[in-house]
Amino acid sequence: MITVSAPGKIHLLGEHAVVYGKPALLATVGLRVTVTLNPAKSRTYIDTIVEKHGVITAVVESVIKKKLNITKIPPYKLEISSQIPIGSGLGSSAAVSAAYIAALLSFLKVRWNLKVINELAYEAEKAFHGNPSGGDNSTVVYGGLLWFRKESPGLKIIQPLQFSILPKLAKNFILVNTGKPQETTKQMVEMVSTKYKVQSAKLEKIFDNQEQLVKNLLLALRDGNENQLIQIIRAGERNLEAIGVVSPSVKSIIRKIEQAGGAAKICGAGGKTKATGVLLCYHSKPSAIENIAKAHNLDYFKTALGVQGLRMEN
Ligand code: PMV
Image (spheres, rainbow, N blue to C red):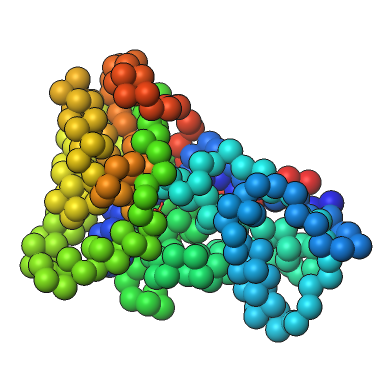
């Protein structure tokens, strides 16, 4: 039996701008996907995730076949269980792909390391999302806090950071789930790209500002500067709104959190109709955010940020 797990991720800041060569700061979250593979007489899949991801098995097997230059994979029993909500900006597809790829390579008795898994998980992510930056898969594979920048198609800076968020700040983050967006990540990225073609100067300015905020965020998290942190999340969210990836109803929830003294932002691609996935929220008294979430009937949860990345479980 082979069992591999991988965590979900959030964008602390830099989503969308990262597609245009700007840096993003990401962190793993304490929710994991677990993939178990056993030899079997015929192929069996146990779980609901595979069904929901639809093509995941076909995509992962084709990535592996191409990499190993093989045409057949012996039958196996696949079990996937996940704590990560799907399609909500928490990197579910990256975590499933990475853990499944590692388990399948082990099943085929092929030695792997994190770099290989990350490269293959990126191939799978491309099949799902078109032209992703690669930030999601890199974060779930390497774990912790990650500085990510796509310099050019063949050159990415993937820098795991050597510090963790100080406990006095970490305890005040809450994730609020606004639900699964109607739009896919691919559609949102395309929408921004269409906008970029007609308003490139405006968007360039926003992306430049987002880059500065990402750099400042790194320092605020490292140094435990709460005031800075709140100002940066608020300003970063304003930039995401100006890009057009935050729906009116979610904007109004975020304004309430700000009026209560906190800060919140969408994480990942966002949505323009209604739900935008998970919000990263911060408040020196997190109960203030819980009350706002409750008033809107939204799920909320605390989770560790910066947990270990992909790992063998047995
Ligand atoms: O929606 P998610 O969690 O997969 O995040 C997408 C992040 C983008 O920057 C919008 C796209 C990308 O590929 O980085």
